[in-house]
Length: 118
Image: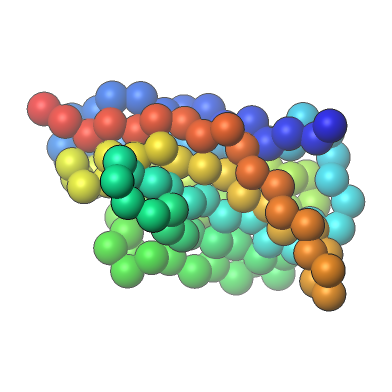
């Protein structure tokens, strides 16, 4: 069974930086987009940033200018560089991949905890 594996989470002080990484346990053909979502306690999961096969990126408003998504869709790898972190960025961050278009399949990672606190 193919898995998405995240790494790079941890505890950081406000204003600090972290870089999250995600890779598939084995190559998944036909991935057309990858993304990072996050879920804080008591809140719904929300999209943080997304990158498509042609390199187009989308960001949640609250992270624009602070977070940067990058990766190689064909290699099923995606990264999230997070700068100027704020306490409200504290959440479990999940990697996501979409395969196919007409009948897409979704892949999720197990999540990595990011805690921003002094």
